[in-house]
Length: 444
Image 1 (cartoon, rainbow, N blue to C red):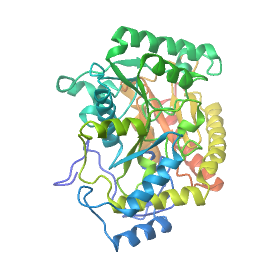
Image 2: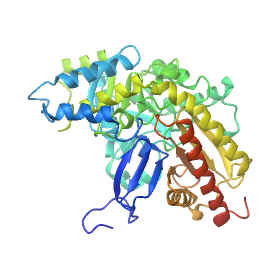
Image 3: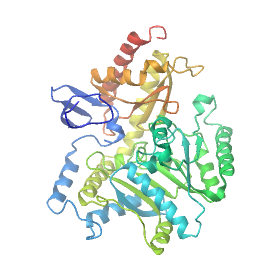
Image 4: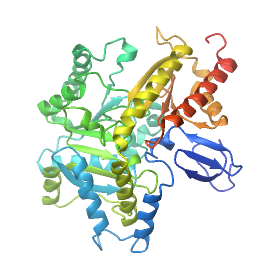
C-alpha cells in the first residue's frame, strides 16, 4: 500500500507501464489481456491513435471552459451526435464526469420535472434488487446491493426495490411470455403498495451489469415495464452506464427492445477510458419544463469539458468507422459459445449469459439446484487472482444481492480479434482448471 494513496482495500497490484489494444503491461513487463475492459469501460481498447490525436488537437485549443462562461463547439457537436444515437425523442444531453454523476443527474432532473408539472408528491425512485447504480449517496439509495447501501442507510432516504427477473435462478423459460408476466406482476404489486402517486420513476439496466452479471430480461419484460410506467405515471430511465457504447451489439441496449425510455444514463464506454465522461439524454419536454420553471438546480465543475467531449467524439468515430457494434455481436456470439464449452467441461459453471460482448458466467456448487459455493471460499476473488497471475483480467461480483454467490464478467474490448478470443479463453480455461484443483476437488 502506498504511503499516501489509498483505495477501497489494502490489496495491491503492479504499477501500469503501458497499454495498447486489448493488452496492458506492468512495470516488470508482464502482459495482461484486458478481459473485462477495465470495469467495462475500455470499449475501443487502449491507446487508440485516433482518439489520442483528437484529444491532442483539442488540447491545443482549450482543455477546459466553464459552462457558465463559454459555450464550446466540440461539446455542442458531441451532444448532437449522441442525441442522434439515442432513441427517437431523446434529444437533450447533459454532460457529467461519470456514471454516478449521471445517475444523480437523472434522479434530480426527474424530480424537478415532476415539480414543474405540479406533481410534488412524486419523489420515490423505484429500482431492482439486485442492482448497482453508483456510489454517491443519491445513487446508493437506488442501488439494490445491500452491502454497498446498508452502512449509509441512516444518511439517506430508502427507495423501493423490486426483485430483478432472475429467471435462470427461478427455473423459468426466458422466452415464455408468462415469465415476463410473472415479474411484471411483482412490479405492479409494488407500485400499488407504494402508492403510484408517490412514484417518480423506474430506474433499470436494460441488460444487467455487474450486480446481476449480464442478465438479459425475459421476452416482453422491458415492453411490459414501459406499459406499467405509462399506466401509473412513472418515468422510465435506462441505466446504460455499462451497456452503452456498442457493448451489447447496438450503440444503446435500448435498441434491443420496443420500449423507449424517457431518459438514458450513459458513461464508461461513452468516453472509453480516455477521459472521465458521462451523460444523461432526456426527452426534450422534460428539460424544457425544468428550464421554464427556474432552471436545473444541478451541475458539476467538469460538466461539458471540451477535452472530454473531444475524447468522446474520437471514441464515437472509432465505434462507427470500425463498425464495432456489429463486431460486438459477431465476437460476442463466438465468445458466448466458447464459454458454453467451458461450462460443459467444468460442472461448477452453473450459468452463462449476456448479449454481445457483455457476458458473464456464474459458479455454483450445484448447477441443477443453483446452490452457491460456500461464501467463505470467496471464489469471486480467488478466481480473479488466479486469472490475474496468468495474465488475464476478469471482473467479479457476488451474485446473490452482493452477499454470496460468484459471477464473473468477461467483456473484452470491442476491437478484440477472433485469435485474441482464443487466447483469452485459453487463459480462462487454464485458470478455471487451477481454481478447481486448488479449491474444488470435491466438485470438479
